Length: 400
Image (cartoon, rainbow, N blue to C red; front, side, top):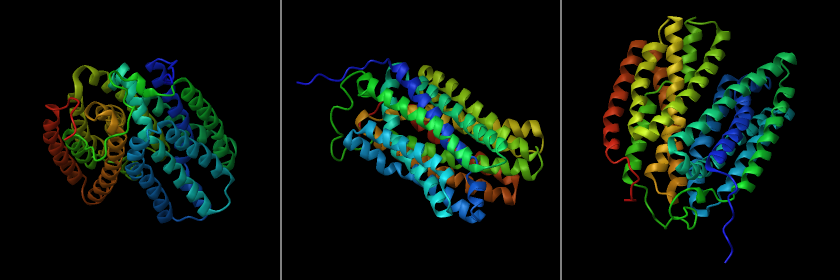
């Protein structure tokens, strides 16, 4: 019998290295996302077309996981999916600097988002195995903190290149090939060192056999998903927050990106803090999500700069918890054989709820800021009530 592949890396080394891969990937695609609107406009795109292209891209990034999650569970091809997904992103973004047609630029942007859908569930399953040894909360938190460091660095790198080249987008996009190549080389090194991350997880090896046909997800997962969708549907997007900051002249327009970068910094800190607390207090730490989300419009939609910026920073804190500790919880309530499917459904639900949240808060904002505050508070109160149904059975559950 062939001996199982040897794991030469520790769980923490695996998590940290994967976090650096995500950091480099974020430099690439967050750098592109920060200027995709004005870049498409150089080809003559209208605001409607920009909205359509970016909307379709996000749909691919999130809803696409409904297919790639079950695919990861059925095939156990975690590394191939991750490698293909990252490769799509690392190639598509620099290629934007070589395009000469609007349709091709739009297609490359959407392809980049599809790459995220391909790799997302498989990556999270592999991280969940390593995080079983490091602590679920801490493992996902460190990964998210490194990821967000790239989210800050990417837009700043693109801004610097644009400033140095008299706003020439071509070298800005081509520069992103450098972190892209570095990320792919690190990923290949990681693959060679940890061919089977499932061996990090105690007990029977999670990747030894595919999920049984027709196996169901635990009931607690669906309750947890409902809580996530509800609290996210009452969570204002930064697009609406930045619209308020700029149109109400709360801060100068040039300061808005700085506020966003600060929110990403808070995102990283909140991920680390909530992950550390999650490993000690369990799922109860997630009660902070609806509470903070309810306070965001109360602060962010004022016209006092300090208070409004504080609201935007609270937005970053909620995002950090969503992207780290709420992902870690999935690994604790869903059996390993079904985690790819669970992560795919979770991401799709989160994406749909984000869309609803943006439309809801934006539409009500046009009517009344007070109405936004009341509506969001009501939604988050409902989410807290639903959360109580999760706290009791929030231990690893059997499939129902």
